[in-house]
Length: 99
Image (cartoon, rainbow, N blue to C red; front, side, top):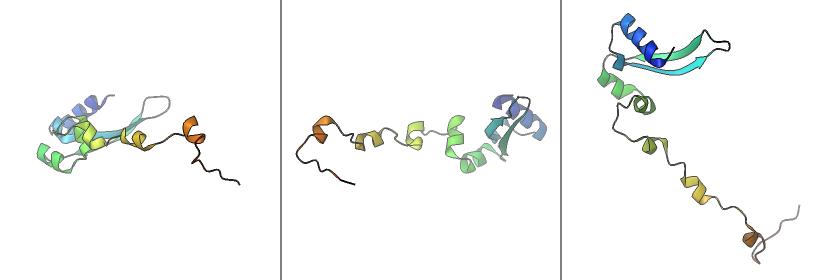
């Protein structure tokens, strides 16, 4: 079952709006036929916007935030890494360590 089907079924049985249900952490069992996951049901959409995590709100695009600002800048670490090249290794300033 997809998350959409699960939210539809939960909304019918609990008699709430689909926007008030947050589903995450879905894992399938080996062999199929069974899945486990978590579902949070909020009183209103305002309560969900206030208490639900920002990544879950991003998945259903309930916030005005951009995804990259919340997930961080992954490319910045590569600018700090300095890989040893032949020019660095062969320079006169290179020190050698003996073990």
